[in-house]
Length: 95
Image 1 (cartoon, rainbow, N blue to C red):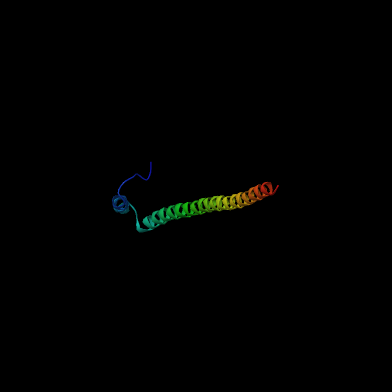
Image 2: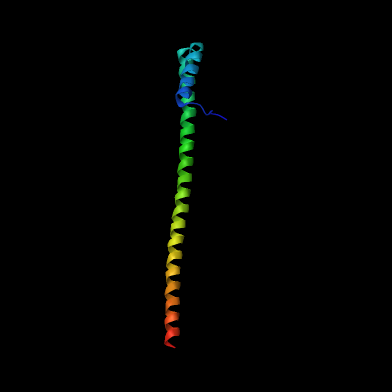
């Protein structure tokens, strides 16, 4: 699985080492192009993950709000039923 479960400092250091190892193989213009391409890939991943997190967060909030709303409705129904039951008991006693 990528990225591997390794120490965050070691993970960041590995990127530095890869950059240092491959940079002598490029002219400055090539290095600029490859670097910009890698940044674009990173920007895409960030935008994709951010949008996905937003959608999932909204879905979770909607579910939580729906559950809270449903619980409030159920509580109101239970109170109304309890009042009806109390009234029925009072009517029985009066008869």
